[in-house]
Length: 278
Ligand SMILES: C[S@@+](CC[C@H](N)C(=O)[O-])C[C@H]1O[C@@H](n2cnc3c(N)ncnc32)[C@H](O)[C@@H]1O
Image 1 (cartoon, helix red, strand yellow):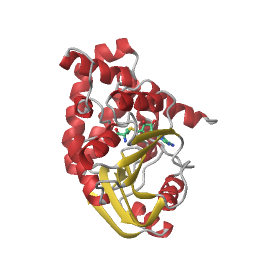
Image 2 (image 1 turned 135 degrees about the vertical axis):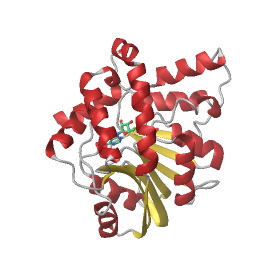
Image 3 (image 1 turned 90 degrees about the vertical axis):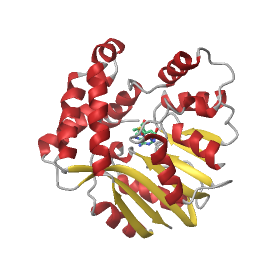
Image 4 (image 1 turned 180 degrees about the vertical axis):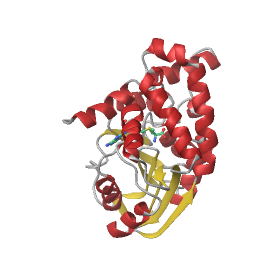
């Protein structure tokens, strides 16, 4: 990685409170030990998106994911959604994750729960995906493209790796109205949001790339409540997160998160689920 912008996104997730160690600490305190772990032992701790497993189910349904499906998860984090798709739906998932701590962390957690044959973790950039063309039945992504500077490149990569008829389903922040420059700068500084597409520009971009049957679900109302709850939790844990040195202990993160909650409440920003077929 070469630019300061790339470094800011990598640094944000290298200090993020959801890490391999934090997931294992959560499991250890709920189960008392880490022996004989099963995939479902991690699910309360390893999903780094809004709405938990229900949101993964919604993507699986829209992407037509079932037994034996080849799925690519773009920006897979600690591979929580990937393990869930392998465990519940019998999918074979390839995770593309850029962060040098999260990618090996994802592989380690996957190994520990015995899913290494069905969930593969590849450290890579979704703007240049190290997968062959027309090999995937589905591509999914959750709350991650906001961090990616060239979303058209990432979505073109999704199109390239999909088989004809394959489906794309992803969630991301989206604008109902243009954020002003100060808010955009705050989202970048505090939460590493590179840029945000609008509810209209994402479908247009998908059609221009060649996708058909493009559909949009507006999740803004759901996200409003979830974000408020998360912010309350972060405030409660502030001392601990400051001590641990994670971004959710930073002043800048707090200022941006408070603004994010307000922007979603006033419907400047929102959450969208976008689905399309090759
Ligand atoms: C909010 S997390 C979502 C993780 C996962 N989708 C989940 O729901 O648990 C966003 C992830 O995107 C990754 N990421 C950011 N930019 C990326 C890029 N250009 N290529 C691959 N991964 C990227 C980050 O490192 C981070 O792990």
